Length: 299
Image: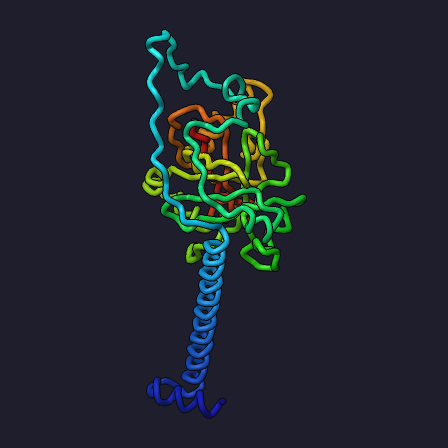
């Protein structure tokens, strides 16, 4: 090895002293080896990502054709009934959990094969779909928030994990939180594509998502905020707050959302329910950093 590096050093760096040229050659070889190993690792994980997406597509059922969402009907002029201003909506009244069991007029059903999905994993809660992104994934749930950090949808140990609903979340909670890994900028696995929402133009151009409850209807959500969050400081505002006792609590939480948001866009309607997507982002708060996407359910 010493003779080989010496000869290479003499060939590549003829004007450099032998000992120094040998050291340079060794450093170059080590650097190239690390680069090749990194590329091999990226190709391996890329292959895994593609394979997993293909498995999801095979098991979820028929392809999706997005429906045309009809606009709200105008006020009932004949009956003298006018629409209630959006600012006066609350998590109670006509948006209360008592009415959430009924299908909203802006909901449709995507043709997921729930029998096959539940047979594959009885922990499935629903399916999350963000148009024009790779996020087209099943959402699971367990009794703890750790298991699906290290296990995929088929319960095999996998570093990518699987998107999962917060363990304390109930179906009719006002705010439901889904977690998944950020595998890095070069990856499209799990919630890695959410990093693109840190670009304001991207955020404004991708404000639609769909969540389908297992064996239920598909609800359309409008993304209204992108938040860089410090998980080590939940005192002032907590994105995981599931319900509000009264209108004052609701308004304070919504004001906190706007104050903490990197980007905020007023929703078309006061949301009847909120879906929150959370992933790691160490760019600002280190290991406590989170990137949070908050979307309000369309009426």
